[in-house]
Image (cartoon, rainbow, N blue to C red; front, top):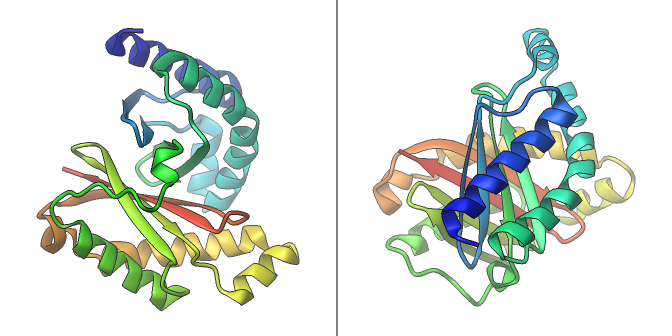
Length: 226
């Protein structure tokens, strides 16, 4: 399928799926992909009910509800991505910036999950070093870290092997959600404050998203830039 047509179909179908399940879809969806993976960036994605919850400082209730809905949505979306753009997605991650009503979804291919394959863009060593230092401050130095761009404004960073024993025990004893909430808050602050993308790659950060697969001990970061 011709790329422009494929992206248009994927954007339309994704918006329809989100509207059917949330009652409102994103105002726009920017999609880009390559051999490593795909990103779908949602803008102005918030329902009236979610706005009320946010006004009452109930952001975690919004996140928990979205997680339940996304768990149902992702298998169908994963299949549709493969059908339309022709790349086999192995894993999907997502995160929301509720303050600016945006969100991002990241699909990783087999190639992007190969830690031995690193996109050699200018400054990647500095990016990895700074992200590793922040991760070590919170948990431990990742066993592996690698990164790639899906478009000139979207950098994906994958970390593997970063959970410490205490975190694993919290997950095993049923505190996964509490751990996720705490890690989201703490890591986002440090990754925005202590990772100097201006110094590393000469770019200004506009957004940061992150998600985990605790079972695989893998985390995906997404930096967006001007």
